[in-house]
Picture 1 (cartoon, protein in one colour):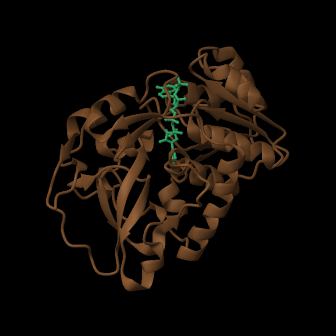
Picture 2 (cartoon, rainbow, N blue to C red):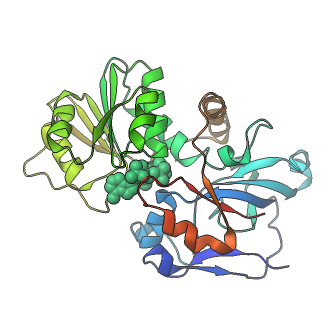
Picture 3 (cartoon, rainbow, N blue to C red):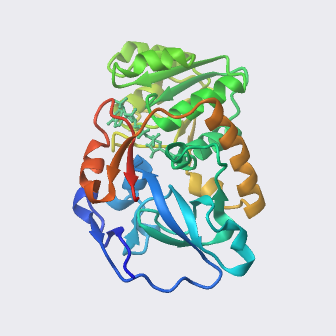
Length: 314
Ligand SMILES: NC(=O)c1ccc[n+]([C@@H]2O[C@H](COP(=O)([O-])OP(=O)(O)OC[C@H]3O[C@@H](n4cnc5c(N)ncnc54)[C@H](OP(=O)(O)O)[C@@H]3O)[C@@H](O)[C@H]2O)c1
């Protein structure tokens, strides 16, 4: 039997480095469950490693991506109860493959009422937002978010407001995002309005930054002593270049590091809150692409205002 995998054998721009291959499917490893993938998103977090940004900790070749939803089609006797169950096959290697053998401890069963399109996006961004808010509590604090139209920033905004943030402001790029930000209780700040960004940064007690580059640099330079700037993404592809040492506390966040110490029990428990959040606030519609159309899916990443691309393996 053969598999379909989106794999990279060298680092580089994802459209150049990734290829769709059809290797022989090896026998299922002992103790592993076999999952037929249904749907997986194309996140910035999936593409950045392909560029070589984390080359020091990736051994090539590597199947791309970190999340998605699939259905269990084979299981060892001690996990026979999972047969037919939809799961998130996490922390077992790249998810952009039609058939995926994975470690049951880190596979998360999906409740029946959660649609595939929501389950597929239930990990990276909601979990990162939960860890960020646990690391830098926001109760009573004024929060500033950049990349405010992103899925991760949406999860952060919702979490911050429900945890008692005094206010949440969001720096957005596409004007189309403004209405949805207001509807979520986020005060919109346009990315091209630098004076307004500086003013928001002077007021902010904590910033969660997904951008890097000149906007994040301006925010960091304007923040007061005693405030916190947390960088968790580089959507601009550019580093921060402050002219002088920042007065705010400067922190970097990587989900991989903060979840390294989680036990399988804590891991499974963490998803209970994520399912509740998805029920209360489902993510916006994504746009589905057949796996064979993966190039078009990748092209749409980064297009201003574009819906989240989802690779359909069925
Ligand atoms: N450190 C971690 O562990 C961790 C974990 C999860 C996510 N992240 C990071 O979180 C960020 C958001 O990921 P996501 O999946 O939530 O994104 P997403 O839903 O795919 O949304 C991308 C957003 O970024 C905006 N954008 C893209 N390129 C931009 C640019 N050059 N300048 C300004 N805005 C730009 C888009 O703006 P428009 O409004 O114009 O469409 C859109 O709102 C990424 O940087 C990702 O790496 C980090």
